[in-house]
Image (cartoon, rainbow, N blue to C red; front, top):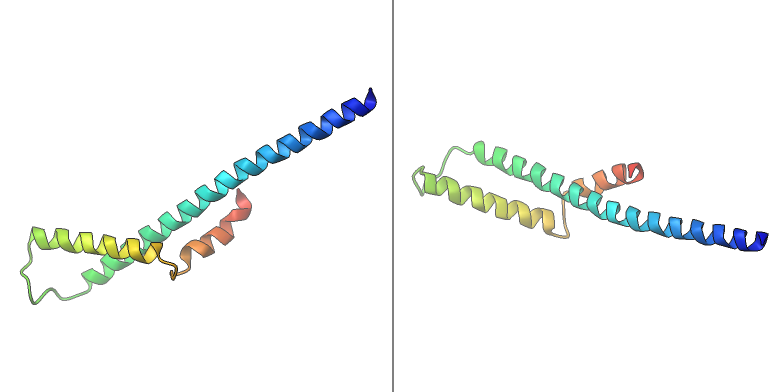
Length: 102
C-alpha cells in the first residue's frame, strides 16, 4: 500500500514538473518576442532621430506624401534590421538579463 502511494506521488510530481516546463517554455517564447519588440521600438526611435538630424531632401519637396513614404521606409528598415541574423544585440542582452526572472 505504501509503495502505491509513493509511486502515485512520484508520478504526480513528474507530471507537475512537466507542466511547469511547458509553462516555462511558453513564457520563454513570450520573453523572446517581447525582447525583439523592444529592440524594434528602440531601433525605430533611433532611425527617426537620425532622420530628424538631416537638413532635408534636396531632390523632393517637403510634403505629407514624402513624410508617409519616409515613415514607411524607416519602418521597413527597422523590421529588416530587427529580423535579420545580424542584430544590434539588444534583444539578446535583454533576454539574458531577464530569463532568470520568469
